Length: 128
Image (cartoon, rainbow, N blue to C red; front, side):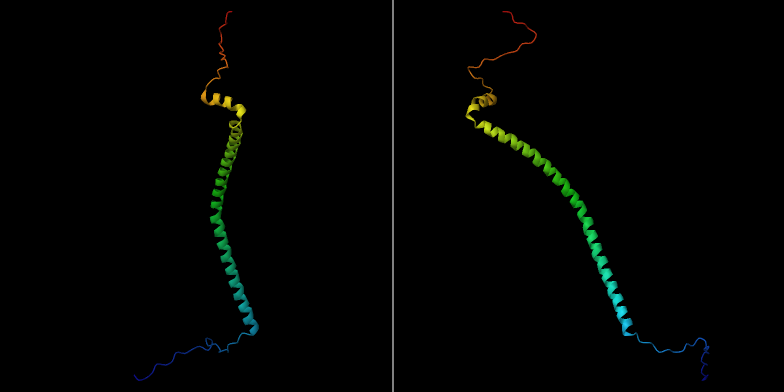
């Protein structure tokens, strides 16, 4: 029992001759480093491009809302501009002394004592 087990037989074919490892030349190392550097640059460029695309995707909705708000404000400005023109024309009229009597009649519905009223009657003929 002290006998040791026999070592398994290895086939000669399965044995590979031990080849010494060949060291990479400096040119191969330089090429490998250039490949890694290029890969990192491409990865960085792709990351930056994705960030830019995401930023644009987020900006497009705010751009459309800004444009609609701008259109609304432009229409309001135009209507306000028209109103200002009307008020400026009336402003000059209100401070014209020649039109003071006409303005009093328009605003108070009072009639000038020297003015006679004319009443139109339809369908009735007036006999003299």
